[in-house]
Figure 1 (cartoon, one colour):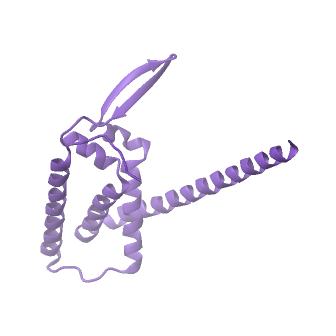
Figure 2: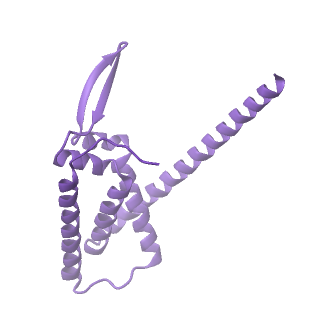
Figure 3: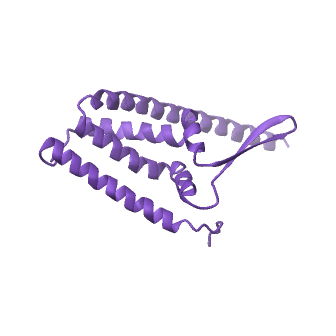
Amino acid sequence: MPSRRPKEDQNTWNFVFSIFFICVLAAAIWAIRELNGEFPQEIPLFDFVLLALAAFRVTRLVVYDKIARWFRELFADTREFQENGILFVEVKPYGTGVRHTLHDLLQCPWCIGVWSALIVTFFYFVYPWAWIVILFLAVAGVSSLFQVVANLTGWRAENLKLDAEEKNRDLRL
């Protein structure tokens, strides 16, 4: 099935940001090597799990959480309007340019996940004090996972209940 989307001339900026990420990654690897005297050869499994959970939590924070909405909206075209006495906010990307690309990036959990993983891993290897922050983020990440699972369970139960009520209603007719 063909897909349709509005045409965007963002390929240049997407390419620039890809190159920028590669440069930041190379600089981070170089800095880790310089500060540690060598490239890390291994990481304990427990620490890896903590890093993954911390990166997960940072990703959710940036992409989804209300507390970071102000940051996401720095790169969006926002417009307030009133309808039926209720004030609404319309948020959409700018037409083209770097702010449009940043808006797209901040809406993408996979994109932010890569950046989060880079940042969390860099801090883990460079700053000894970062371990406690990573632990805190990992605990918050587990808490977020529990909440997502609880929400999915509740939604599934509610859908099953609605399906059962609909079937009962159909049987009565």
